[in-house]
Image (cartoon, rainbow, N blue to C red; front, side):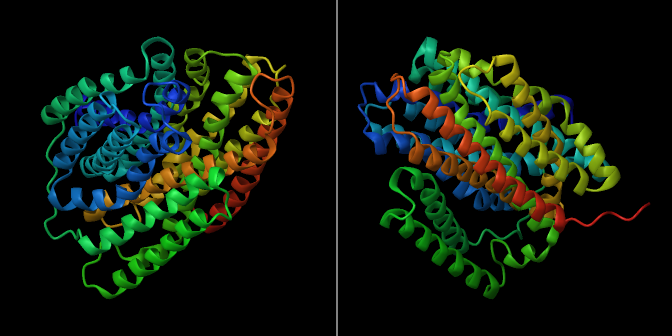
Length: 458
């Protein structure tokens, strides 16, 4: 593939992933807008994108395998632009939520298509380096979303963010149509409508339970009901997939230790990263007094490690196998969370930026090897499905990270913003929340490292 085609694919990934984070910085503007959303509508305006995105990733990857990855990419960009128009012109909270959901459906088509095209057009010996580039784009997307959301919120208004996305998606679609090669489709690849419906409904229920847990309470009827429905539907999907001749995917693929380890590792790494994202904006604005634009820019130190380290991590994976870069990277993410947990009102920003850099190095080190572990565990004709599974693990891990940190903050934070008691109470709650996330990440690191066996000497 040409360098220009690779850049187009990475730009598509960056935009789709960026919208996960961008709206978080617009919450105060949305709350004060003419839409007058209540607390539940505000939550859904943020989370509708994530829920639809995560739930449709695996079926969308299978659709790309069967009907064509380039077509899936172009269709996803079209849906993305349509959802942005709906959001930008919304006259009610319901329309805004619907627009966010349509954007999420578009992103679910974009992400697996970009990775599967990349895998198909890259020789096996260069695949880990190509995936390192894709991982870099996905990581930078979260940072671009923070910066873009902050700038739009401070200077342009919340609708401007969605209007900017419309021509951007159009330009990317035109560039992809010209520069991204057509990858042979696999007519025999299974889409399995019933299996796709069961799996999508199960993931919607589970992710909804995770997202609503902090606000509703983990023991509430709605949250426990969502988890129960998700578990029943996952059980129904598993039973159906084991019996049918051509399932969406065979659950027995999880018999592979590498696939299990890669999926858990990706979810755990993004659990840690989004634990940080959730508290970062609040800490910088409420405790340090930064404005939205400065808050978005203040997370830029996370770009350094993500930009420079993935290729080094890929080379370590090629030479020594995945255990070294995965274990070291996940330990650095946990260490970065512990460092950030020490921050308070008196912490100078350069020191705080150094803590973010530790996290970025860890993410860049482990993400390529974890991605290879997932996509290489499935046959080539299921590249879209494998990339969907990889990205679904990211999104579910991110949702869990936000849920865990949000729950601890909610339980420990009682003072109102602006009162003298708020700052010390917030920093104490943030410290406990991040240490809880770091402990969970250390446990996941031990499990993942144990699942990988050292590669024998060449």
